[in-house]
Length: 357
Ligand code: GGG
Figure: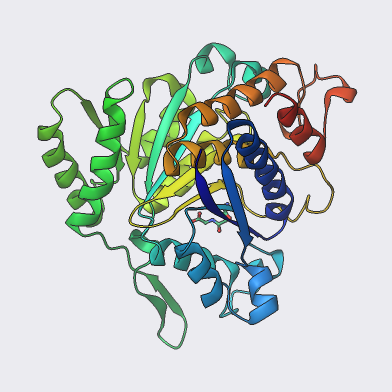
């Protein structure tokens, strides 16, 4: 039995809807295993800007630091998309949270549940057995470098920077993970063009000497984008920079059937943050159709990584598997063969998972 403080940070759009379901799953797990989970809530993103003018209020940050883990939803709002001049934006809250909590490693498991082979746009014979663990570096790169305008605003710049220690620490996590899996690591960069990528590759090559049991390959990001679709099963652990990881994992979500299936764990120096890789999806917000499985699977990662509760985490993943085996789908993972009555909304899908816990 364990006492744990979990901070729920729903954020914007469908983040609110899916995080509520993720929390119910944590509640049920606590009851079943005799744990005591206590919860608090905090604001981030657009809802935080509306309430306080700040996308990550100090109060939210303090609560995050004081928690054992954070279950997070999403940030974003369409009103900023067409307003490039907006100085305060929801995503600033997300980046600040990562930096302040030292969350330099973002783990994104791309796991295809067999039942969803038909939901993917990739051919089943290419896809079957795909199981990739991405390590996206999360506190460096072009996201955090100097940015601005010059030449009277007619020229814009974003500077990409990496230091050796930043590559070494995420590289080490990726190599360690590869050792527990199929012992293959692919390091993705653009070393034929970018200086940051050349430093990245140097550091990974140095680390590789410490892990002779791990087979390492180096790929350029453009080739990786192609190989993920052509031959996803060739990959085991993939480690890459912030921007490349952001883009490649959205692409790789199609291996798992939908963005709505992909969970993530952001870890590093402090409190771990667990969230779906999808954003706020305002086009479907309030309609009750968002897929809650990424939030539920994020809760499973939280139990495993932050609390060391392996059995609890596996039970949640098994429950998701059972629900998919029974044929239930949200509309993003339904296909032409799914009967209309098997297509569930957010809460009904959550209830199905809860019924298997
Ligand atoms: N749950 C993920 C989320 O809110 N994504 C929105 C976003 O702005 N993502 C940018 C990033 O992950 O760097």
